[in-house]
Amino acid sequence: MKFKQLVKSGLVLGLAATLVACSSDNGTDTPTTNGGSTGGNSDTIVIGSMGPYEGEYSVYGIAVKNGIDLAIQEFNEGGGKLLDKTVKLVSYDTKGDATEATNSYNKLVDSDGAVAIVGPVLSGESTAVGSASQGIGTPILSPSATALAFTETGPNVFRGCFTDPIQARMMGEFAVDTLGAKTAAIIYNTGADYSEGLTENFKAAFEEKGGKVVEVQGYSNGDKDFNTQLTTIKNANVDVLYIPNYYQDNALIAKQARGLGIEATFIGGDGWDGVLSVVEDASAVEGAIFCNHYSPDDEAIIAWAEAYKAKYGVDATSFSYLGYDCAKLMIQAIQEAGTTDPQAIVDALKNISFDGVLGHLEFDENGDPIKDLAYITIKDGKYTTYTK
Image 1 (cartoon, rainbow, N blue to C red):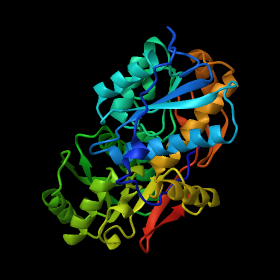
Image 2 (image 1 turned 60 degrees about the horizontal axis):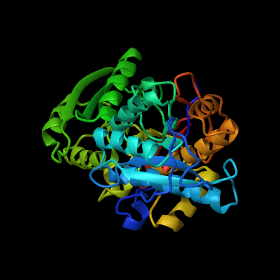
Image 3 (image 1 turned 120 degrees about the vertical axis):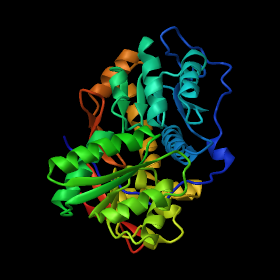
Image 4 (image 1 turned 90 degrees about the vertical axis):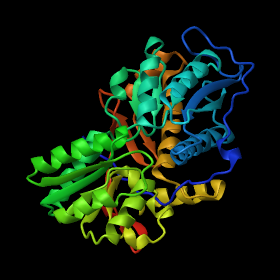
């Protein structure tokens, strides 16, 4: 399988409410029994989205939603027509909760007439929606759900990001083959599917390559003090410290680790993207390496990031890029299907050949992406391509 390039240039912390407002004024929607419709009215086709727009994980949900919004606005304003209609986006806030996500899915299909879903954002909520969609077979494309179980929920379910096993195994092999690491420690969030999945697969790959994971330390959601776990890790004197969490936790862990004198190279997954936007002192993460969906040196990435920041006033992250590409991809699939019939759209997704801002993408038989991967390092306080 080919993998994909990725880096990130910043983050989406406090966006204005106008950028995250969910559309729910759909009194003219005409849903059908199979979940398809012509959209909000006879002139529109509804694509649904959902994600956490408030709460702990809202920075990720907002970034994805902005990317989706931008893609659909560009399509409509560029004079594009989807089956001779304009595209209408209807979004709901899941608050990161699986039950809220399932309720949002049901509302999108039953009340809003959504013919396809670009989302959800987090693995847990996405897996719940994938399961809920099996009665109708609604096309589901999550930009960012990495848990392997997500696309296992059914043949109508796809993702635009790497799976946990792929990116974790790639980093495990990279640590041994490229960095020459012989020992590793891990500190991870025991309450997050993303963090748990990366931990399990990194450990397996690192040890299969001959390395040894000598310490695995866990913490709970909401923890801010990691000194107990990091003191144990310091005493192990490892070559690399794998930190497979989202960037807000990674920033705190990195600062405290350096404060304790830990000199190991920090490595991680795509959840690191955005860490520079929240660290007080970039020296705490200097030299860290993570795998991502794009390279910051790519001209198309640079141009898109500038346009995104001009519109939203914040730096784009991988979640923004993934939301944008997945919305474009879903529109292409509906165009190629030539109908809003769910199975026809699913068939088009299975056979898609898509070129987006992140590069070329196709899907394997499981609905997982075939694309490239890049290793990003933080050098002089900036994201830099380490290797592709």
